Amino acid sequence: MVQGDALDYGSLKSSLAGIHTAFYLIHSMGSEGDFCERDRRAAQNFAAAAKEQGVKRIIYLGGLGGDEKLSSHLSSRQEVGQILRDSGILTIEFRASIIIGSGSLSFEMIRTLVEKLPIMITPRWVQTLAQPIAIEDVIAYLTETIEIPLDTSKIFEIGGPDRISYQEIMKEYARQRRLFRLMIPVPILTPYISSLWLGLVTPLYVQIGRSLIESIKNPTIVNDETANSFFTVRPCNIQSAIQYTLTTEDKDFENFHTRTEHPESDTKVQQRGYQRGSRIFDEYYIHTHDAPELAFKPIRCIGGKVGWYYANYLWQLRGCIDNLLGGVGMRRSRRDAEQVKTGGVIDFWQVECYQENRLLRLRAEMKLPGRAWLQFEVYPQKEGSIIYQTAIFDPLGLAGRLYWYGLYPVHRLIFKNMLINITKNIREE
Image (cartoon, rainbow, N blue to C red):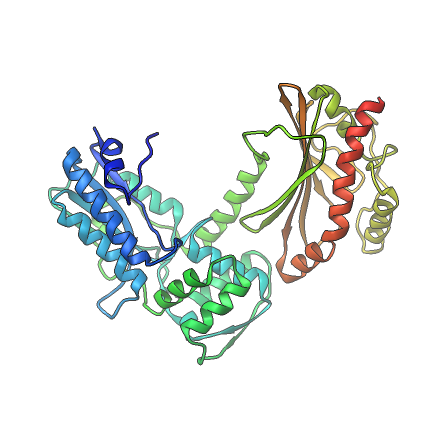
Protein backbone atom coordinates (compact mmCIF):
# COMPACT_ATOMS: atom_id res chain seq x y z
CA MET A 1 0.00 0.00 0.00
CA VAL A 2 1.35 3.39 -1.02
CA GLN A 3 0.04 6.71 0.27
CA GLY A 4 -0.34 9.86 -1.81
CA ASP A 5 -2.22 13.14 -1.61
CA ALA A 6 -4.05 14.13 -4.79
CA LEU A 7 -3.71 17.79 -3.78
CA ASP A 8 0.09 17.38 -3.51
CA TYR A 9 1.54 16.70 -6.95
CA GLY A 10 4.93 15.60 -5.61
CA SER A 11 3.42 12.83 -3.47
CA LEU A 12 1.64 11.29 -6.46
CA LYS A 13 4.72 10.51 -8.54
CA SER A 14 6.00 7.75 -6.26
CA SER A 15 2.46 6.41 -5.79
CA LEU A 16 1.99 5.97 -9.55
CA ALA A 17 5.47 4.68 -10.38
CA GLY A 18 5.27 1.36 -12.26
CA ILE A 19 1.47 1.44 -12.51
CA HIS A 20 -0.24 0.32 -15.72
CA THR A 21 -3.92 0.87 -14.76
CA ALA A 22 -5.11 3.40 -12.17
CA PHE A 23 -8.61 3.72 -10.72
CA TYR A 24 -9.66 7.28 -9.92
CA LEU A 25 -12.32 7.20 -7.18
CA ILE A 26 -11.61 10.54 -5.50
CA HIS A 27 -14.32 12.96 -4.44
CA SER A 28 -14.02 15.91 -2.06
CA MET A 29 -17.65 16.98 -1.59
CA GLY A 30 -17.44 16.27 2.14
CA SER A 31 -14.41 18.54 2.65
CA GLU A 32 -14.35 22.20 3.62
CA GLY A 33 -14.23 24.95 1.05
CA ASP A 34 -15.04 24.84 -2.66
CA PHE A 35 -15.21 21.11 -3.44
CA CYS A 36 -15.41 21.80 -7.19
CA GLU A 37 -12.08 23.60 -7.10
CA ARG A 38 -10.50 20.87 -4.96
CA ASP A 39 -11.76 18.16 -7.32
CA ARG A 40 -10.40 20.13 -10.29
CA ARG A 41 -6.92 20.47 -8.74
CA ALA A 42 -6.87 16.84 -7.60
CA ALA A 43 -7.75 15.59 -11.09
CA GLN A 44 -5.18 17.87 -12.74
CA ASN A 45 -2.44 16.69 -10.38
CA PHE A 46 -3.38 13.04 -10.84
CA ALA A 47 -3.54 13.29 -14.62
CA ALA A 48 -0.16 15.05 -14.84
CA ALA A 49 1.55 12.59 -12.46
CA ALA A 50 0.02 9.61 -14.27
CA LYS A 51 1.26 10.95 -17.59
CA GLU A 52 4.77 11.51 -16.22
CA GLN A 53 4.94 7.99 -14.75
CA GLY A 54 3.71 6.29 -17.90
CA VAL A 55 0.31 5.09 -16.69
CA LYS A 56 -1.48 3.46 -19.65
CA ARG A 57 -5.10 3.45 -18.46
CA ILE A 58 -7.29 5.41 -16.03
CA ILE A 59 -10.68 4.09 -14.91
CA TYR A 60 -12.90 6.76 -13.41
CA LEU A 61 -16.31 6.61 -11.70
CA GLY A 62 -18.41 9.76 -12.15
CA GLY A 63 -22.07 10.74 -12.27
CA LEU A 64 -24.90 10.65 -14.78
CA GLY A 65 -26.50 13.82 -16.11
CA GLY A 66 -27.99 14.87 -19.43
CA ASP A 67 -27.77 18.00 -21.55
CA GLU A 68 -29.86 20.11 -19.17
CA LYS A 69 -28.19 22.57 -16.79
CA LEU A 70 -26.38 20.39 -14.28
CA SER A 71 -25.86 21.01 -10.59
CA SER A 72 -22.38 21.99 -9.41
CA HIS A 73 -21.92 18.48 -8.06
CA LEU A 74 -22.74 16.66 -11.30
CA SER A 75 -20.97 19.16 -13.53
CA SER A 76 -17.86 18.80 -11.35
CA ARG A 77 -18.04 15.00 -11.69
CA GLN A 78 -18.10 15.31 -15.48
CA GLU A 79 -15.38 18.00 -15.50
CA VAL A 80 -13.06 15.59 -13.67
CA GLY A 81 -13.64 13.00 -16.41
CA GLN A 82 -12.75 15.57 -19.07
CA ILE A 83 -9.53 16.53 -17.24
CA LEU A 84 -8.45 12.89 -17.10
CA ARG A 85 -9.19 12.39 -20.81
CA ASP A 86 -7.31 15.57 -21.74
CA SER A 87 -4.16 14.02 -20.24
CA GLY A 88 -3.88 11.85 -23.37
CA ILE A 89 -4.03 8.67 -21.28
CA LEU A 90 -6.68 6.13 -22.29
CA THR A 91 -9.52 6.96 -19.88
CA ILE A 92 -12.68 4.94 -19.30
CA GLU A 93 -15.31 6.98 -17.49
CA PHE A 94 -18.38 5.41 -15.93
CA ARG A 95 -21.34 7.66 -15.23
CA ALA A 96 -23.67 6.21 -12.63
CA SER A 97 -26.87 7.23 -10.89
CA ILE A 98 -27.50 6.51 -7.19
CA ILE A 99 -25.29 3.69 -5.96
CA ILE A 100 -27.18 1.38 -3.59
CA GLY A 101 -24.78 0.23 -0.89
CA SER A 102 -23.53 0.93 2.61
CA GLY A 103 -21.68 4.25 2.79
CA SER A 104 -23.13 5.74 -0.41
CA LEU A 105 -24.15 9.30 0.50
CA SER A 106 -27.37 9.15 -1.50
CA PHE A 107 -28.32 5.75 -0.11
CA GLU A 108 -27.48 6.73 3.47
CA MET A 109 -29.62 9.86 3.06
CA ILE A 110 -32.56 7.74 1.88
CA ARG A 111 -31.99 5.19 4.65
CA THR A 112 -31.92 7.79 7.41
CA LEU A 113 -34.98 9.66 6.19
CA VAL A 114 -37.02 6.46 6.04
CA GLU A 115 -35.75 5.14 9.37
CA LYS A 116 -36.36 8.37 11.29
CA LEU A 117 -39.49 9.88 9.77
CA PRO A 118 -42.83 8.04 9.85
CA ILE A 119 -44.38 11.07 8.13
CA MET A 120 -42.41 12.92 5.45
CA ILE A 121 -43.12 16.29 3.90
CA THR A 122 -41.77 15.62 0.41
CA PRO A 123 -40.77 18.40 -2.04
CA ARG A 124 -40.82 18.00 -5.81
CA TRP A 125 -37.32 16.56 -6.01
CA VAL A 126 -38.52 13.21 -4.65
CA GLN A 127 -40.31 12.70 -8.00
CA THR A 128 -37.08 13.06 -10.01
CA LEU A 129 -36.22 9.95 -11.97
CA ALA A 130 -33.06 7.99 -11.26
CA GLN A 131 -31.64 4.66 -12.37
CA PRO A 132 -30.08 3.22 -9.20
CA ILE A 133 -27.39 0.58 -9.43
CA ALA A 134 -26.13 -1.88 -6.80
CA ILE A 135 -22.60 -1.45 -5.49
CA GLU A 136 -21.65 -5.01 -6.45
CA ASP A 137 -22.64 -4.27 -10.07
CA VAL A 138 -20.52 -1.09 -10.09
CA ILE A 139 -17.56 -3.09 -8.81
CA ALA A 140 -18.17 -5.71 -11.51
CA TYR A 141 -18.02 -3.00 -14.20
CA LEU A 142 -14.84 -1.50 -12.75
CA THR A 143 -13.14 -4.88 -12.46
CA GLU A 144 -14.07 -6.01 -15.97
CA THR A 145 -12.67 -2.74 -17.36
CA ILE A 146 -9.11 -3.73 -16.42
CA GLU A 147 -8.95 -6.14 -19.37
CA ILE A 148 -11.49 -4.69 -21.82
CA PRO A 149 -9.83 -3.99 -25.22
CA LEU A 150 -10.09 -0.28 -26.09
CA ASP A 151 -7.92 1.99 -28.24
CA THR A 152 -9.50 5.33 -27.34
CA SER A 153 -11.05 6.93 -24.28
CA LYS A 154 -14.73 6.19 -23.78
CA ILE A 155 -17.69 7.15 -21.58
CA PHE A 156 -20.13 4.48 -20.43
CA GLU A 157 -23.47 5.23 -18.79
CA ILE A 158 -24.47 2.55 -16.29
CA GLY A 159 -27.57 1.92 -14.21
CA GLY A 160 -29.95 -0.75 -13.04
CA PRO A 161 -33.01 -1.83 -15.05
CA ASP A 162 -35.43 0.40 -13.07
CA ARG A 163 -36.15 4.04 -13.86
CA ILE A 164 -37.82 5.16 -10.66
CA SER A 165 -38.22 8.23 -8.49
CA TYR A 166 -36.50 8.87 -5.18
CA GLN A 167 -39.89 8.45 -3.52
CA GLU A 168 -40.23 4.96 -4.99
CA ILE A 169 -36.74 4.07 -3.73
CA MET A 170 -37.72 5.25 -0.24
CA LYS A 171 -40.92 3.20 -0.37
CA GLU A 172 -39.02 0.08 -1.42
CA TYR A 173 -36.51 0.52 1.41
CA ALA A 174 -39.40 1.02 3.86
CA ARG A 175 -41.11 -2.13 2.56
CA GLN A 176 -38.02 -4.26 3.09
CA ARG A 177 -37.53 -2.86 6.58
CA ARG A 178 -41.25 -3.43 7.34
CA LEU A 179 -41.90 0.27 8.00
CA PHE A 180 -45.05 2.19 7.09
CA ARG A 181 -44.26 5.67 5.83
CA LEU A 182 -46.70 8.44 4.92
CA MET A 183 -45.38 10.87 2.30
CA ILE A 184 -47.13 14.22 1.87
CA PRO A 185 -46.10 16.21 -1.23
CA VAL A 186 -45.34 19.90 -0.62
CA PRO A 187 -43.90 21.55 -3.76
CA ILE A 188 -42.70 24.74 -2.03
CA LEU A 189 -39.64 23.35 -0.26
CA THR A 190 -36.53 24.82 -1.93
CA PRO A 191 -33.24 22.92 -2.15
CA TYR A 192 -31.81 25.23 0.53
CA ILE A 193 -34.65 24.56 2.98
CA SER A 194 -34.50 20.86 2.14
CA SER A 195 -30.77 20.82 2.97
CA LEU A 196 -31.42 22.41 6.38
CA TRP A 197 -34.12 19.82 6.99
CA LEU A 198 -31.72 17.04 6.01
CA GLY A 199 -29.12 18.45 8.40
CA LEU A 200 -31.56 17.91 11.27
CA VAL A 201 -32.59 14.35 10.51
CA THR A 202 -29.63 12.77 8.69
CA PRO A 203 -25.92 12.39 9.55
CA LEU A 204 -25.01 14.43 6.48
CA TYR A 205 -23.60 17.92 6.85
CA VAL A 206 -25.91 20.67 5.67
CA GLN A 207 -23.48 21.62 2.87
CA ILE A 208 -23.34 18.06 1.55
CA GLY A 209 -27.11 17.74 1.85
CA ARG A 210 -27.61 20.91 -0.17
CA SER A 211 -25.23 19.71 -2.90
CA LEU A 212 -27.06 16.38 -3.06
CA ILE A 213 -30.48 18.04 -3.24
CA GLU A 214 -29.32 20.37 -6.02
CA SER A 215 -28.11 17.27 -7.89
CA ILE A 216 -31.35 15.39 -7.37
CA LYS A 217 -33.26 17.97 -9.41
CA ASN A 218 -31.39 16.53 -12.44
CA PRO A 219 -32.72 13.19 -13.72
CA THR A 220 -29.93 10.61 -13.68
CA ILE A 221 -30.99 7.99 -16.20
CA VAL A 222 -29.11 6.04 -18.85
CA ASN A 223 -29.62 7.42 -22.36
CA ASP A 224 -26.73 5.57 -24.00
CA GLU A 225 -26.79 1.79 -23.49
CA THR A 226 -23.46 1.11 -25.19
CA ALA A 227 -22.20 -0.55 -21.99
CA ASN A 228 -24.45 -3.55 -22.70
CA SER A 229 -22.43 -4.44 -25.78
CA PHE A 230 -19.04 -4.05 -24.08
CA PHE A 231 -19.59 -5.71 -20.70
CA THR A 232 -21.08 -8.96 -19.44
CA VAL A 233 -22.54 -7.22 -16.36
CA ARG A 234 -26.34 -7.21 -16.16
CA PRO A 235 -27.29 -5.06 -13.15
CA CYS A 236 -29.97 -6.25 -10.73
CA ASN A 237 -33.20 -4.36 -9.97
CA ILE A 238 -33.80 -1.99 -7.05
CA GLN A 239 -35.48 -4.66 -4.90
CA SER A 240 -32.48 -6.98 -5.19
CA ALA A 241 -29.99 -4.12 -4.70
CA ILE A 242 -31.54 -3.02 -1.40
CA GLN A 243 -32.03 -6.60 -0.24
CA TYR A 244 -28.41 -7.40 -1.05
CA THR A 245 -27.21 -4.38 0.94
CA LEU A 246 -29.25 -5.25 4.02
CA THR A 247 -28.30 -8.93 3.82
CA THR A 248 -24.61 -8.09 3.39
CA GLU A 249 -24.72 -5.82 6.44
CA ASP A 250 -26.19 -8.71 8.44
CA LYS A 251 -23.47 -11.07 7.21
CA ASP A 252 -20.74 -8.53 7.94
CA PHE A 253 -22.15 -8.12 11.43
CA GLU A 254 -21.80 -11.86 12.06
CA ASN A 255 -18.02 -11.29 12.00
CA PHE A 256 -18.18 -8.06 13.99
CA HIS A 257 -15.36 -7.36 16.42
CA THR A 258 -14.80 -4.18 18.33
CA ARG A 259 -11.43 -3.16 16.87
CA THR A 260 -8.15 -4.59 15.64
CA GLU A 261 -5.94 -2.42 17.87
CA HIS A 262 -6.55 -2.59 21.58
CA PRO A 263 -5.17 0.39 23.52
CA GLU A 264 -3.79 0.00 27.00
CA SER A 265 -5.89 1.88 29.52
CA ASP A 266 -6.20 2.27 33.25
CA THR A 267 -8.64 0.25 35.30
CA LYS A 268 -11.46 2.75 34.74
CA VAL A 269 -14.22 1.97 32.27
CA GLN A 270 -13.93 3.79 28.94
CA GLN A 271 -16.95 4.34 26.69
CA ARG A 272 -17.64 5.29 23.09
CA GLY A 273 -20.70 5.24 20.82
CA TYR A 274 -20.94 4.98 17.04
CA GLN A 275 -23.21 3.81 14.23
CA ARG A 276 -22.73 1.42 11.31
CA GLY A 277 -25.52 1.30 8.79
CA SER A 278 -28.75 1.23 10.77
CA ARG A 279 -27.12 -0.30 13.88
CA ILE A 280 -26.22 1.72 16.98
CA PHE A 281 -23.21 0.61 19.05
CA ASP A 282 -22.62 1.48 22.71
CA GLU A 283 -19.18 0.15 23.64
CA TYR A 284 -17.46 -0.07 27.05
CA TYR A 285 -13.98 -1.39 27.73
CA ILE A 286 -11.61 -1.78 30.66
CA HIS A 287 -8.09 -3.03 31.23
CA THR A 288 -7.48 -5.78 33.78
CA HIS A 289 -4.21 -7.35 34.89
CA ASP A 290 -5.78 -10.81 34.72
CA ALA A 291 -5.10 -13.37 32.01
CA PRO A 292 -7.80 -13.80 29.30
CA GLU A 293 -9.02 -17.17 30.65
CA LEU A 294 -9.58 -15.61 34.09
CA ALA A 295 -11.12 -12.43 32.69
CA PHE A 296 -13.56 -14.45 30.61
CA LYS A 297 -14.82 -16.71 33.40
CA PRO A 298 -17.41 -14.26 34.86
CA ILE A 299 -18.63 -13.60 31.30
CA ARG A 300 -19.08 -17.31 30.65
CA CYS A 301 -21.16 -17.64 33.84
CA ILE A 302 -23.39 -14.59 33.23
CA GLY A 303 -27.16 -14.86 33.66
CA GLY A 304 -29.21 -17.56 35.37
CA LYS A 305 -28.52 -17.85 39.12
CA VAL A 306 -25.35 -15.74 38.86
CA GLY A 307 -27.31 -12.81 37.41
CA TRP A 308 -26.07 -9.86 35.42
CA TYR A 309 -23.59 -8.37 37.88
CA TYR A 310 -25.53 -5.14 38.41
CA ALA A 311 -29.14 -4.16 39.20
CA ASN A 312 -30.53 -7.69 38.90
CA TYR A 313 -33.91 -6.39 40.02
CA LEU A 314 -34.06 -4.25 36.85
CA TRP A 315 -33.27 -7.29 34.71
CA GLN A 316 -36.04 -9.20 36.52
CA LEU A 317 -38.43 -6.28 35.97
CA ARG A 318 -37.57 -6.26 32.26
CA GLY A 319 -38.28 -9.97 32.16
CA CYS A 320 -41.69 -9.47 33.80
CA ILE A 321 -42.57 -6.74 31.30
CA ASP A 322 -41.55 -9.06 28.48
CA ASN A 323 -43.82 -11.78 29.88
CA LEU A 324 -46.73 -9.36 29.93
CA LEU A 325 -46.02 -8.48 26.29
CA GLY A 326 -46.10 -12.16 25.32
CA GLY A 327 -42.31 -12.59 25.23
CA VAL A 328 -40.04 -15.26 26.73
CA GLY A 329 -39.13 -13.27 29.86
CA MET A 330 -36.52 -14.63 32.28
CA ARG A 331 -38.20 -18.00 32.81
CA ARG A 332 -35.72 -20.06 30.80
CA SER A 333 -32.64 -19.12 32.87
CA ARG A 334 -29.72 -21.29 31.64
CA ARG A 335 -29.19 -25.06 31.69
CA ASP A 336 -25.54 -25.12 32.72
CA ALA A 337 -24.03 -22.63 35.15
CA GLU A 338 -20.62 -22.58 33.42
CA GLN A 339 -20.81 -24.17 29.98
CA VAL A 340 -21.95 -22.10 26.98
CA LYS A 341 -22.79 -23.31 23.49
CA THR A 342 -23.78 -21.46 20.33
CA GLY A 343 -27.55 -21.67 19.99
CA GLY A 344 -28.02 -22.06 23.76
CA VAL A 345 -30.24 -19.88 25.94
CA ILE A 346 -29.34 -17.44 28.70
CA ASP A 347 -32.49 -15.88 30.19
CA PHE A 348 -34.11 -13.84 27.37
CA TRP A 349 -30.98 -14.06 25.18
CA GLN A 350 -29.83 -16.65 22.71
CA VAL A 351 -26.12 -17.38 22.26
CA GLU A 352 -25.41 -16.31 18.69
CA CYS A 353 -21.64 -16.74 18.75
CA TYR A 354 -19.23 -18.22 21.28
CA GLN A 355 -15.44 -18.66 21.33
CA GLU A 356 -13.86 -20.02 24.49
CA ASN A 357 -12.07 -17.32 26.52
CA ARG A 358 -12.53 -14.89 23.63
CA LEU A 359 -16.08 -14.00 22.58
CA LEU A 360 -19.71 -14.23 23.70
CA ARG A 361 -22.43 -12.63 21.59
CA LEU A 362 -26.02 -12.74 22.82
CA ARG A 363 -29.05 -11.91 20.67
CA ALA A 364 -32.15 -10.63 22.45
CA GLU A 365 -35.34 -12.66 22.13
CA MET A 366 -37.44 -10.25 24.17
CA LYS A 367 -40.12 -8.06 22.59
CA LEU A 368 -38.39 -4.98 21.17
CA PRO A 369 -38.96 -2.35 18.47
CA GLY A 370 -35.88 -3.63 16.68
CA ARG A 371 -33.08 -6.16 17.11
CA ALA A 372 -30.60 -6.14 20.01
CA TRP A 373 -27.32 -7.86 20.87
CA LEU A 374 -24.96 -7.83 23.84
CA GLN A 375 -21.37 -8.80 23.04
CA PHE A 376 -18.38 -9.51 25.27
CA GLU A 377 -14.82 -9.83 23.99
CA VAL A 378 -11.52 -10.41 25.79
CA TYR A 379 -8.21 -9.50 24.14
CA PRO A 380 -4.80 -10.43 25.59
CA GLN A 381 -2.37 -7.62 26.39
CA LYS A 382 1.25 -7.49 27.49
CA GLU A 383 0.03 -7.13 31.04
CA GLY A 384 -3.33 -8.80 31.41
CA SER A 385 -6.37 -8.31 29.18
CA ILE A 386 -8.84 -5.81 27.81
CA ILE A 387 -12.54 -6.63 28.19
CA TYR A 388 -14.96 -5.12 25.68
CA GLN A 389 -18.70 -5.05 26.35
CA THR A 390 -20.83 -3.75 23.49
CA ALA A 391 -24.59 -3.19 23.41
CA ILE A 392 -25.86 -3.15 19.81
CA PHE A 393 -29.31 -2.12 18.64
CA ASP A 394 -30.85 -2.11 15.18
CA PRO A 395 -33.89 0.16 15.72
CA LEU A 396 -37.02 -0.42 13.69
CA GLY A 397 -38.11 3.05 12.64
CA LEU A 398 -38.81 5.98 14.95
CA ALA A 399 -40.27 3.76 17.70
CA GLY A 400 -36.99 1.88 17.90
CA ARG A 401 -34.95 5.07 18.17
CA LEU A 402 -37.24 6.49 20.85
CA TYR A 403 -36.86 3.24 22.77
CA TRP A 404 -33.06 3.28 22.53
CA TYR A 405 -32.47 6.94 23.37
CA GLY A 406 -35.26 7.04 25.96
CA LEU A 407 -33.61 4.23 27.95
CA TYR A 408 -30.04 5.26 27.16
CA PRO A 409 -29.33 6.87 30.60
CA VAL A 410 -30.53 3.68 32.34
CA HIS A 411 -28.64 1.43 29.94
CA ARG A 412 -25.46 3.43 30.37
CA LEU A 413 -25.67 3.13 34.16
CA ILE A 414 -26.32 -0.61 33.95
CA PHE A 415 -23.71 -1.47 31.31
CA LYS A 416 -20.94 0.59 32.90
CA ASN A 417 -21.45 -0.95 36.33
CA MET A 418 -21.85 -4.42 34.83
CA LEU A 419 -18.35 -4.19 33.43
CA ILE A 420 -16.93 -2.81 36.68
CA ASN A 421 -18.46 -5.68 38.64
CA ILE A 422 -17.29 -8.27 36.11
CA THR A 423 -13.70 -7.20 36.79
CA LYS A 424 -14.33 -7.24 40.54
CA ASN A 425 -15.73 -10.74 40.24
CA ILE A 426 -12.51 -11.91 38.57
CA ARG A 427 -10.49 -10.90 41.62
CA GLU A 428 -12.98 -12.30 44.10
CA GLU A 429 -12.69 -15.71 42.47
